[in-house]
Image (cartoon, rainbow, N blue to C red):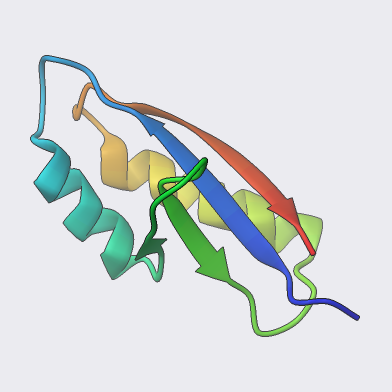
Length: 77
C-alpha cells in the first residue's frame, strides 16, 4: 500500500485575493506548499474514501470563494 496524496494545482486570477492569502488558507486545511508540477499536496493518513476526497474538495471551494482562483485536484497513491 502506497502513501495516498491529493495534489492541487492553482490557477490564480488577477482579481481577488493575493496568492499568499490563498496559500495560507490552503495550508490551514492541511495542504503543504511545494514546488514542481503541483502547487500543494495533502497527505492522507490512510486510503481516502470518495466521500473524504469530495469533502476536501468542498473545503477547498469554501477557502477559495471570491478569491478569483480556480484549481484542479488529483488524488492517488
